[in-house]
Image (cartoon, rainbow, N blue to C red):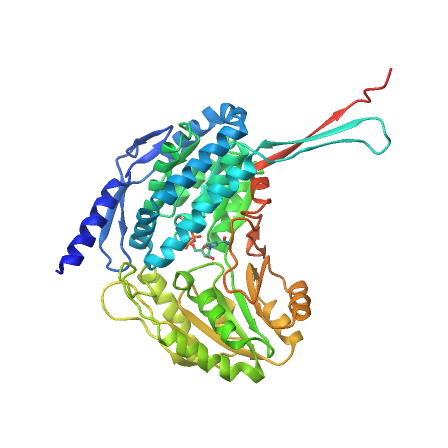
Length: 497
Ligand code: NAD
């Protein structure tokens, strides 16, 4: 073992030892009611990183008890006080950016530089919503007939269940927790069992920032439905906000119907990346690399279908395949790693099955096309040329470093192909003609459109999808509205005798 490796391992061990391993309920870290635990693994090596308490249904109800007990007092807490807690949390996470980045690399696999990027992006939701907390305006107006008065105010919706996926362990949590705090809601957070460590550390930072006990409760668990099941039936729960796959989202929406719960659903995507013949091809390749390879392709916003106009397809494909082929895979902590492992063996096998089926259907692997031997769940950055339009790989989320390319003849074809998906989250358009970009944006069915940009996520922008990509928006001025309810007060004519 090299000295550098020993130093790194020591730093990793120290960081891992600082992460709380219990459930956070009512401000206390505690064991699961049945003493159960589960392991968290490093996807680059398969080794166990930590063992956490695994919440039971009983623990989930205890967490809701805690959230419900402080909901009324938290709702009455001055907006400025809530805002300053969020701002302090932003400062603390920024100070500890290196720790948060390393923790995410360890449990999720992304290269450290990307993990640093996620810390910046994820922390920004705390700062953005600290600013939004004091600007949640209602309205007061005279009714049209000129007599009565109309007063409209926003109130916190109440205790929320927040369920997050494994792919962005910090940002997916801050995107929900920050607006819930801004609105005055209490909450039960259930992180993904594959990457719960970041949420555990994040919750500790929220307590350090002054968040009162019971406002944020964290129930990491190996049984997701054991947590959501009893809570969705409990009339004290007022909302569920979920980020994850469309099939799980559908099931949660069905369960949420029981109590007619408010829901926010950030679900899967199948982003088209459309390159028109008048695009700057070098910029398009740069954008394609970002849109495809961020998070090893394990992103709901990942470009999944490369639609390239026929006359530029050859040149774009050649340049893109060369750039993809030059990427180095490796454990995210290694300085030259540009592509980390996929999250687990199942994810890697699913990606390979899609690639194999596409090749069988007539596509060509221009670079990559196979899993990487050795420990960990690495997959080669892959570009597939000549993919038939009906190939399965174009119809579902790939969630891996694989770029299928297909061609189109006209603008109308591009729009039609883009809209064939049941998903409607992110999309990317490359052209030098602004009118064309606007024209296409108006006709494609996606919640988010990038113009000559491969990364569009931003805390100040409304993130979310249409069709089966979900309901609701996170971030922007829209984000806080997901956690408030509108109350109208009708006031009788004050001039009436
Ligand atoms: P997933 O649906 O398997 O799991 C998401 C979360 O739901 C996890 O916490 C999981 O434990 C929990 N869960 C699973 N089954 C459940 C059940 N029956 N009841 C309650 N909770 C349950 O998704 P994933 O594999 O963690 O994440 C990848 C998916 O998330 C992809 O489809 C991706 O597109 C999507 N995603 C969407 C966005 C977005 O903002 N739209 C962002 C990131 C990821």
